[in-house]
Image (cartoon, rainbow, N blue to C red; front, side, top):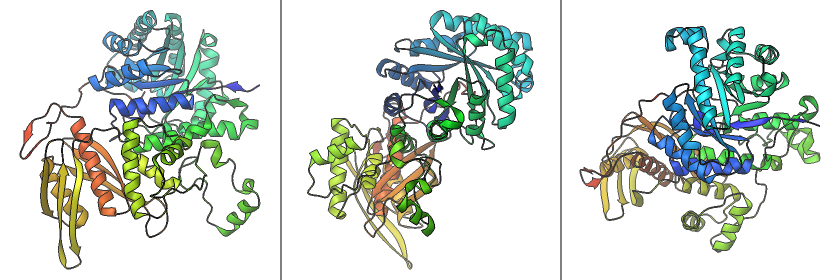
Length: 527
């Protein structure tokens, strides 16, 4: 019988810490619900002490999501642990994850503590957390650059203090598989009490080896892997959940380990996380990339047509990639539309469904056929879960190789319609400048990406942007058969995100736009 490996998902904590990946409470809740359907063992919902928004996200998920343990991160200080407990205590399975750095460089320069002081802090933190919570994880930050015997010593002490999970993080992505495997084996064999607890690993991808290191750890005795959807995370990211899970499943005869993950829900989770964070999945990304099951070379196509196993080691269906060729058009009713979305794994609220259906009708008027890929793009565009303070009412552009590009844009709020015009370096730039005049928000465009959802002259264009305002980064996404409109919708989506993260409304010129809030001073951690 295969040994079961626990999956600890930290998309909502470590994944969200990646630049520009900020999520609101509703978006976090939607992702957490999908993670529960994916059947992860633990959801690390955030770092409760960081900000009121982080606390609200963890608390909301704890109250509403059943099945997985709901976890909050906490430094090894009483205030963090109290705040973490307040956030997770309503969960079906509350879980506190506390940490402290153990490498010489961190203890000397960051903590300015002696090793014995660090052990004492860790022990007191675990005791406090365990008095509150039945499941307590302890992490030795920067473990792979720590003294191995010191790790065994601190782990033994926190196990005696009540820790139920011990985590060995490769915080800076420094280790390589053979070395990391030896470390896990050493810790497991030389730490008194380790047989009583779950041994976990958390690998970063700075050298591109997070998944390989995680698998090496599993082969050397790790019981739990900490990972994120699409490998999101600080710097180069974390170990990708989908890669670890499918590696264990596809090469079962080699690993002889398995997980409880419902793999047919992987693709749905991947697209949702990509849509809500604005982090585009690269085309050649393993498992969930657009090209993962695409075959262009003639010899490959010939082989796949004869037998898919010639060039596919797993099926698209195994991760939930939609394969139906059902096509909808403008005469398709709301029932057919909602039914197809449910078959694809999207369960929208009545309000979101209506919004998506209205956009579907707009697109169906311009496109003869709306495919599953089009539907996915439409839902991604509408699933921002951000209140639309501004909505696009009208735009007109004039451009040419010997014409100064100009744009007239009209936006609507709940109580007014505002119109402005502007010139720019191109039609998209002109539209953005006109919008900037209307909203009064100074924005710097950091990234602009465009892709065709399907082939053909009437293909949907999907635009994603990343913008900066008041030192914060926000993402936006828009979809349309008209690329200027898709660009406008993406920019407006980002604007509405900015407004969502601001404090009560204040007058700025022509329209009421909330002022910026200060960023939280409490630190985050990659653990």
